[in-house]
Amino acid sequence: MRHPHGLRAAAGAAGGGGYSGDIAVAHGSTPYVSVYPWSSGFGTKYANPATLPAGVVSGVTFSPDGTDIAVAHDTSPYISVYPWSSGFGSKYADPATLPASTGKSAAFSPDGTAIAVAHSGSPYISVYPWSSGFGTKYANPATLPTGDGWSVTFSPDGTDIAVAHNNYLSVYPWSSGFGTKYANPGSFPTVLASGVAFSPDGTDIAVAFISSPYINVYPWSSGFGSKYANPATLPPDDGIGVAFSPDGTAIALAHQDSPWISVYPWSSGFGTKYANPATLPTGTGWSVAFSPDGADIAVAHATSPYISVYPWSSGFGSKYANPATLPKGTSRTVAFSPA
Image (cartoon, rainbow, N blue to C red; front, side, top):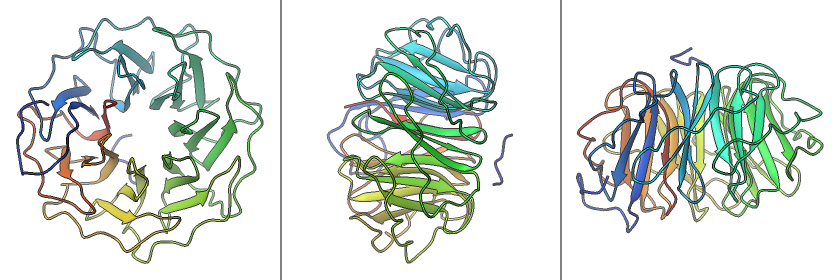
């Protein structure tokens, strides 16, 4: 994979939905994370946190209730979490046991009682109890992922945890700790996987990875089913970020090479790829996210303006105007706050 690294006032085209919240972008230069009010367009960027992340941020996520924001970054302590209330509060104390190395991705459990970090260096995944601060790190899984963790997510019901890593994917039962790793799927390419996502109902799991067909999707029911057929129109190059729409009727992949983002109808299989947006993202797509109401789709990408957002209604609308204050450097992750 050719990794480069190592909003209230409406602006832009007509469209979008009733969601008003915040949109966060993780990026490669200081202040490393930028957050904006969002309401069918970018508002004025919020002030930076008083204590900036210590280095390049690759992952950003909000807690399920929207009261905290977490960033995974490449310099110790590798994970930073802040209270969030239309702005950053004072950074929480670091965990007593830090992740081993570069933080790539962070995820809260659906009930907000745990926070997971995918990172470089064994054990590649670290999970902590969360209650307005870090608890004592949970024991590592008995069977570790087999390379650097790139993306981590919990299933919608919180009973499973998946980590995409250098040798594809590991999924475990989760109940205040790791259960025995699920068997690998029958179709298991031993290549770097950068993204993983469960469908909103938890019945499918999608993996973005660095060899053709660049995206695999499997039925999920406490284990992998047989891989769904590949889309008729494949993405053009390495898959990096993947997301389902909130209603589960679309699946989006951020990837290398133009058009940088590919979206397909989803109904227990891929439909015919949607037309590309009229105004493409301007470089490698690193991450994709739908707004909680499904009416907008955001792509974090490698070249200025680093973030592109479009109305979404079974296809791309006209791109919203760029934020007045752009993110600084390659944007690696984008996340909307909960509705």
